[in-house]
Length: 273
Image (cartoon, rainbow, N blue to C red; front, side, top):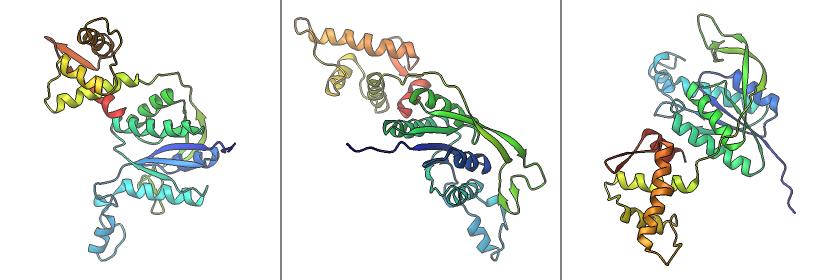
């Protein structure tokens, strides 16, 4: 039997912090680190381009510098030095709830399936990331923690020290694990059915009972049960009770005059799961 060592995984978000991210990772003793981050569309930032245009003068045009990328590179540099980890970069729109939750759930689900301990730093990054992180933890059994700031960077050149990115926090306390409460993932068949329904709506295809039941049968979401009755009528009742009624109850769809439309919550469920 192959015995796999249980690993410690830490997830964090990089925006305008360094110490808040690096120090707890070193203290926890992480084996693997995921960094959710966002940069400008050009990816690498345009600081270098501006430096060349200005004759090589470093930081000649701060307004055009990709600050996100600058902080990300500094965090990665520090992690490589101590504790000696090359982080896994996950580029996503950290200020948007749905894509952040999607990435967090995917990471946590994979690592937890492998039997690893997963921790997530909720103190570094925007509030949308923190909210998504807490929800993901409650669904996937990961462990959230927060970081108290011991010393802030409050001075004229905020966030920087000796020309290097530091962030709002200059020093921090030990990581404090936060309590969580069980939160179940939405049923897979309800989500799969909703995504099928969403796809039909987006393509302006028919979503009548007969059409949807045909697609649900092909997807294995509706199977033959009682052959002694009218199969189509039986399937209509099942589709209504098991899918439509539950979508309505969860607020994933709205019904007006017999016409179903996805709500914002329903579209988010399709995007995340």
